[in-house]
Image (cartoon, rainbow, N blue to C red):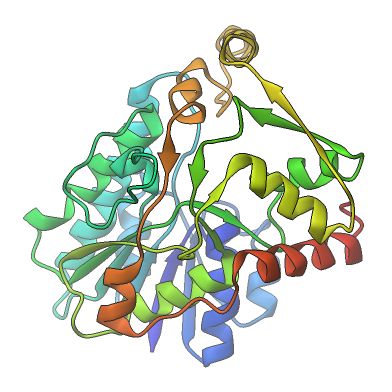
Length: 324
């Protein structure tokens, strides 16, 4: 198949590219920096220079594609409008270009659990619709999702939770690093429940979302069925490193204070940052959990990794690359 990937130099997009190349697909990537994306070109990926504001580049990139995987997104900003432009309007440009093709490609949007908002303790979210995002990022991703139903093209939306695995620098790597010292910071009392997904499993799910016939026009949560508390996640990370760990609870007031400082610093120097006081609304919830059963039933997708095996795989990659 002919496929286009946005966000190809990012974490999710990079793992998706790996999977598509393994399948033998003909892959194109829309990239802001061809120089940064040069390693993709050496692997046979065609590069189109442009960003989510470049309608001409987007039009050229989607032409002749069977599937478009839209994983590019802005994660942090000083204001909500700075997120809405790339995340909502960028999605609108991608989708509009797809709809304008004689045979519109299927569009697979990589959204986020943040678009649905937090769940309740012991009650994972199962379907989209009961959506209450609590951060600027979450609202921008929900707004991006809401663009698609108004356009004439086949689409599917996946909402992954926290992702982890090889090459992840931002999500679980900091906890692997601190757990290696036998102590790890823990938000609150450690009871918040989480769903997670290994990057290889997410890449497989995205490929399925681009090919399965019965999921057009639907939104799915996609993650490991396992649910883990933040305290037990830290303990599982320590086990993957063959270490014992002492969780160090960090109270809400301390996190808010730290994020207020980092947010003010970013504002002072006109820099985008995910470390914004807004993130406190995400860090201190009962749960961020979802039931992937609907996607599994509709497609037959099953994650290859459970939590313990996924963390062991991640630890092995970190060690072999000198990250821990």
